[in-house]
Image (cartoon, rainbow, N blue to C red; front, side, top):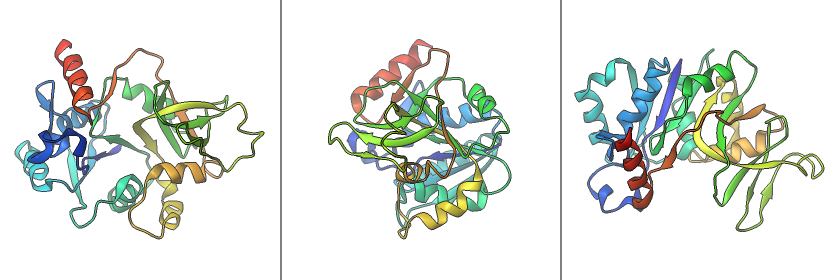
Length: 247
């Protein structure tokens, strides 16, 4: 199985830590976050990974090479010319990820200890186009899911904006869930992804929202207790470090 790690972010909310270091190399538990995620994917049986780079790209590339790419097939998707966001990043990496088998996408700034092999097993050999890690977490923007776990829309609770290709009746009982930054994607989405945006830079979330009627996008909520922290802010970085040091 293949994977992709988003490691291109600017990390502006972590300044001054990221003034001279990419967010993906910020230390959590004695290891750079990128190493934590690579080892997580590798332990789940993923043996080929694409890492996208932009901010301090040379540092990330040097780190990977110094560690012999952690013993896996590793590719660099170079976004130094233009940061492409999540949708554009997945599209740019198509030459490595397109094919017959699904691939896992994981944000480098998400520290989580949920059972990834269990999520992969839940995806199985199904006809699901994407499976998203979701949870009951407080945020301003939620994905909406039907009672059978299918994504049916998106809403911003701060602005009241709601988007869905389904009718109001079809989403009336939809449950809002927070997206966890980990997804399993069927490469069959690539033709739609290529036609979706006229700009190379775009987010995957609007794509999921607009296409969730046409595509089968399912949510995955781990049955076990797990930790999940977005290390993008100093206070949450400290929480992740405390969790890591306790393990």
